[in-house]
Each structure stands twice: as C-alpha cells, then as structure tokens.
Image (cartoon, rainbow over all chains, first blue to last red; front, side):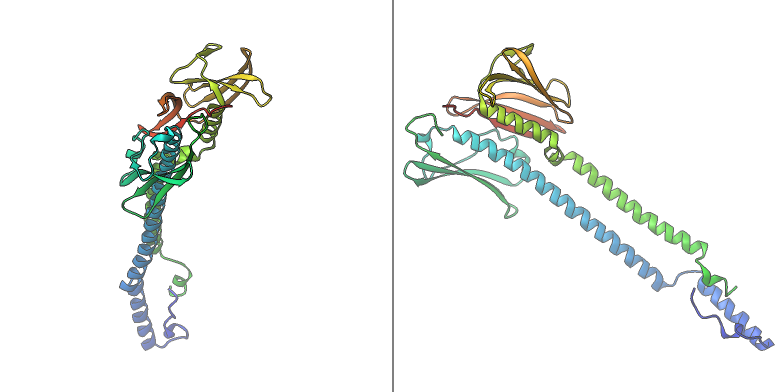
Length: 158
Length: 165
C-alpha cells in the first residue's frame, strides 16, 4: 500500500519505459490482490494472542469466583458449628479429642475435597479451646475458627 | 491508479479486517455471557447483595437478644415463613418482633408494643427464607434460617438466643 511507485511514473517516459511501467503496475496489482503468508501469519498470531489472553482471564475469573463461593460456604459452616460447640456441656470437652462437625452436613457436602474437623485443647485452668477447621485436600487453603470455653461450674454463662 | 491505491484500504481488506474483529467480538461476548451465567448460578451474588445481608444481620441480632418465642401476634403465627420473637428495645420496653417472609422476594420486620404495631422495616430482592428450629446439645432450641438458590442450600444460619442475666 505504501510501496514506492515505480520510478517510471515519476517522469515522462519513452516507449520502452512505458512498457516497463505497464509491467511494473501489473506486478504491483498482482501483489495487492492478496495477503502474503507473513501478513496472514502475523494477523493470526495477534488474534491468537488476544483470544488466549481473553481465555486466560476468563478462567482465572471463574476460578476466583468459585474460590470466593466456597469460602462463603465455609464461613457459614464454621459460624454454625461454633454456635453448636458453644452449647455443648463443658464436661464433654475432653482435651486431645477430635471430632467431626456436629451441625448439618448439607452445606459441607457442597465443598468438594474439603474435610472438616474439630479439635479440643486444654488452654489453661478451667479453659478449653475448640479449633474448628475446614481444609481442602487439593490445596493449602483452609478456614479456621477457634472457640474458647470456660468452666462456669454448671452456670449458664458460656 | 498507483496514486489512488495508497490512499486507503481495498474492500477486501476491510471485509477481512471486520470479519476478524467480528470473530474476536463473538468470542468475547460468548465468554462474557458464560461468565454472567456462572455469576448468577452461584451464591456469591446473594451474599454480597446488601438486602439479604441486612436481613440476616438484623435477624441474627434480634434472635441473640430475644427472651422467647411467642406463638402469635396480630395475625402472625410461628411457621416456616414467620418468626416471632420477644425482645427488649433499647429504651428497656418489651417488644414483639415478627419476621414475615411469606411474600416471595420480600422480608418484613414488624415490631409491636403492647399488641400495637409501632414499626415496620421491609427489604426487597431477597431469596425465599425459611425458618426452622435446631436442637442444641444443651437442650436449647436455636433458630435456623435457610435460603436456597438453584435447588442448593445457599444461606444457612443457626442462631441461639444469648443467656440474659
């Protein structure tokens, strides 16, 4: 498109030059009739880069949405579980023991590859801490809540 | 002829360029529509929306502060779509709070004092909440609030009234 015109057009030409000019124009027209292999390859590479980038962004966004979704579920499960463990009798909290979650497992079933556990520890005189953990087996991701219980001697405080 | 051609693109070049742009736009639109479908299908929208969050927060606070579950008030009865709580207002007066989820997409919190309606707060664009009870290990009964989205349990909250001195 921005090719330099044949030099024969720049000045009045003699018959042999006209002949050369006609030949040159014909060659020029034949070159403009289509794209070269390099042009097509460059265009395809650019298009490929754009599509690949778009796909990568799309899948990354999808992955983040799923992760956020799973974390919302996990925190709901942990909040409910903490509420239940607050109301367990203090005497039933044996240090060193671990247990499965006590609340409804329906939400937990929506977290593929996630395991939930409750571990009880002695935290001091008349104190127990309950560590509620959800961890995903396919990643290092986990959500954890700790509930501290005190022995009120059977009173109504938790 | 050779002077006119460099001034613009040929029809074929424009057609090819527009076709390539069209293909690219189609891919983008397809990806965006898929993303939109995905965002709608999961519960993050529901929980990040201010109305359901506001309803859950207020309801949780009402339950934690409540002193009992009256059977009925002003035509409202305890049911899957109605929760009635007895609580103390900030000024120390007793008030009965009725949470009404009977209308789809709407949550109503109606407050009564001495049987008289004194206030109503309404939230729209909320999922269908259901009320149930949950038995606690110490023999207490907690309120369980649930909402489903696309058949799946999306919101599940267990709230137990706090012990009041």
